[in-house]
Length: 416
Ligand SMILES: *Cc1c(COP(=O)(O)O)cnc(C)c1O
Image 1 (cartoon, rainbow, N blue to C red):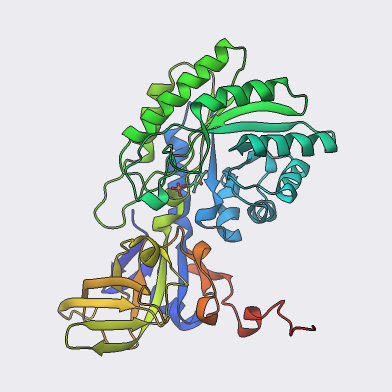
Image 2: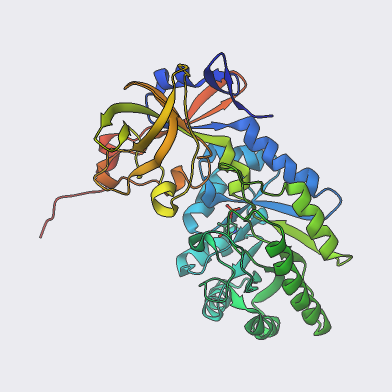
């Protein structure tokens, strides 16, 4: 069931005409389908039935409070990477007891905040971080729940910028060092060993790197068990890919089955941290064509959204499908779809076959629900766009479009 469909040549999000929303809120805007987000979470939940588990949605993929609330109400926990994300998830009513905290550079302030809130566990990525957590929990008279993120050194075969589980990447502890770290943690009164985690990359379209990683992690789990260290939570991170154009990523069900088989009978609670696969295909970015510009060589559609709103094409040369919101039945021809920003890298598509449209037409940039708004910026002093959520025949703005006053909030003239 796709909640973004054409009916009589008009794009709908659930039962709402996208053009109606554009009229109401202006362009550009992100549009999320609540039913799609819900379906994606439920796909994980049902795939994991019978296995003790916790799905911790990776907040950095899309951290809008409405998205977090929706997922939290359905029972999801959260994978956070900053104090700001912890602030958001608590605002959305997600229990800290369902929060795992990842990231290589947690500050003292952030660690303190997480200790005070009582999160499920820190996914610790270095010895230095472990020491900082130990010291801060000692100062507070607390015991910090920890897990080590190990780097299983497997190639996820994805884009190098979103590959994280290779020895050369900055993430996690090498398996050899992890053993020593666990022994240190075991000897500390202020640290409680909860789990083990890994996260090898994003947009994986094949199961074998996940299974290779799990096997390496399990070897360590078994070694730890022999040394009297037992692990309660095994966190496989996120990374399951989605279809942007013609990829055929595994379904959560296939992924869960493969994990289940590899885990065997070990008494472990499986944690997954999906981000992209929950929200990626639940969102579109709607933009308006401002101008059509023909040069000798090329035809450009200059739109009102830009790389500051959706960075993935410029950042990773990522492919996003682009469709007109209202089909006019004209021939398609190759266009470069570009934004107004003063950078050559400000594009959404190059030489893309698109139905010929005129200025004023609305375009939907698809699969924009993950790493879309969360990576947006105010570059070129562009207010960040509105975010809208729809369910059934209702929609509402879940983040107002920024104003010019928002742009200068906190700024002051220099009082040298
Ligand atoms: C980014 C990230 C995720 C989410 O990855 P997706 O590819 O969006 O599923 C999960 N865990 C960690 C530690 C991450 O850094």
